[in-house]
Structure formats: C-alpha cells, structure tokens
Image (tube, rainbow, N blue to C red; front, side, top):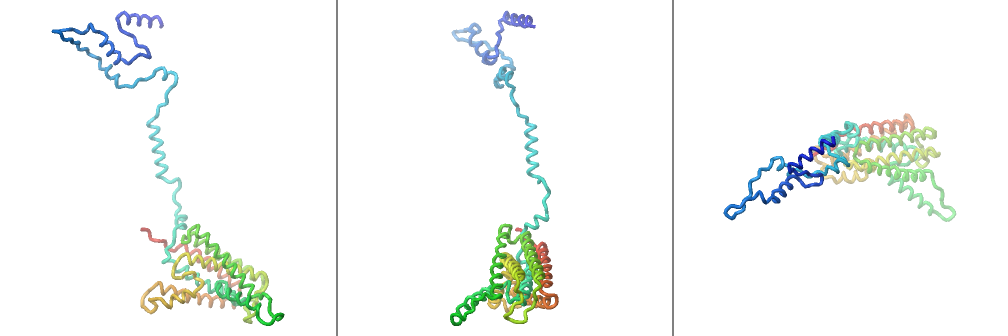
Length: 357
C-alpha cells in the first residue's frame, strides 16, 4: 500500500504537478501564485506585455465559495451538528403543549369561581332577611337578646354600666345581670362572625364559591346552636319581660353561634352591594325608603321595591319563627333554620353571573 502511494507521488512530481499538504493554501490561491510566478508564460508584442488566457477548471472556482475546513480538527474532535428536523419536532411539540391544555377545563370549578350578578341575587338576599327575623325571634323570646341587632345590645350594656352609679352608696346594684351578659356575648361573637368575611375578600366576595361556602358556614353555626340549646334543656319562651329563661352555659353557647351566623350573613350581604344592604339592620333601609324619589311612583323600581321587600320579609321571618317556637320549641325551630340556610347556600349556585362585554 505504501509502495503504491510512493510511486504515485513520484509520478506526480515527475510531471511537475505540485502536491498540497493539509496546512497548505487553497487551490484558488495556489493557481494565482503559480500564474504570477511564471513570467515565461507572458509575451511581449510591440513593447506591450501580454499574458496568455488560462482556462481555470470550474470546479476550482467553486472551491472559493466553500469555507475552509480543518481536517485535522475534524479527525480529532468530531463536531456536533444540529439536526433541523429534531429542532423542528421540539418546537412543534412545545407549541402543541402550549396550545392544548393538559387537562380539560372543569366547568363546575369555573362556575364556582365566577361572580354573580348582584341584580340577579334577589332571591337569596331576600332569604337572608327572612333568616334575620327568624333567628332574632328565637333569641328574644327566651333571653330578650337580639342576635342580629347590635344597636340594642350596645345600648343595653350602656344601661348596665349606668346602673352601677344609681342610688346611694351601699345600696347600688353591682351585679352583672344575665341579660346583660348575653348581650355582651352577642356583641363579641357577632363581631367575630363578621371577621370571617375576610376570607371572602381573599376568595372573591361575589364569587359563587364564597357565597355558597359562607352560607354553608351559617348553616353549621345554626346547627351547633340548635344542638347546644337542645342539650341545655332550657325553656323556649320567657313569661316575664325581665326574666330570661336561658341561664346555663349551653345557652350562652347557643347565643354565641347564632350571633356569629348573623354577623357572617351581614358582611356577606353587604359585600354583594345591593339595595338589601346588610340584610340585618333595617334602620338605614327605613330612612332610605322614606326619602326614595320613586316611593310613590307606579311601576317597578328596584331601589324602592327591594327595600320594601326586605322590610316585609324580615317581618314574616320573625312571625314564622315565633310560631314555630311555640309549637316545636327553640331547638326544633333552629333545626328548621339550619335547613333553610342550607337551601340558601345551594341557591347561590344558580344565580346568574355578570354579563361579559
């Protein structure tokens, strides 16, 4: 093999054909150098120097367009060539992953996260007003405490404090009456229940998820109140205006959970931001109704009609609650209220959402 290679190289040298090494110049540059170094190929005519036209192989001309490749480097360190097809496949796969979701959208979850249209929330908010009268009729019939009307409870505590300074020294009443203790319990637990509204501010105060969850919590609070007053064994109706029949510890627990449920209901109704306002305190509703420009106009005016509806329904709730207390007692009445609140929680799911632009 080596002898044949030596013979071929010798024959090339004999024909005056130069040999190129790996580190030599390109063929095109070599042709230029040979043409310039061969003055004998030039001729002089009439004192002018002419060079003969040399035909260059087209293959050698095309070699100039190619880049120089280091053969030694390629032999020692194999290069990594990109595969256009592999890049294309990766890009296509990435686009397909971005355009197509990994899991199909959950319509139930999307509806729960959607916000309700306040103008379509008349039914559940009306039921809220009904529950205000319903719950307060139970607590007031037995303990003369409004679990939802904290204005009265606050005034009652102020009167209890003023009583400490009545009469001559040594004859003053320093006792903390049972009704006053229940009023203080109601105020504190009402405020605590309203603080649960902060959860709704995080989730979304108008989303179906929070409105259903918050109303379900109200139902749970009512259920706990029903169980505790049933276990307490206290009477349901007081015969004397100044003598409350709820006196034991379980009665305080009942008042606490009823107040928490109404506190949560109040902030939820307020966040929906309708004519029903808090669905609890209707003093402001009465004031706004009396100054409503459409009060004596015919036709449907939500600003007027919803206020009237809230007042009437709260009255019906109080009437219904007292009738049930007389027939089935406080525990049974609160059990009915627990079921009503559970139905209200389900009704929020069917309230229409806001119209998209």
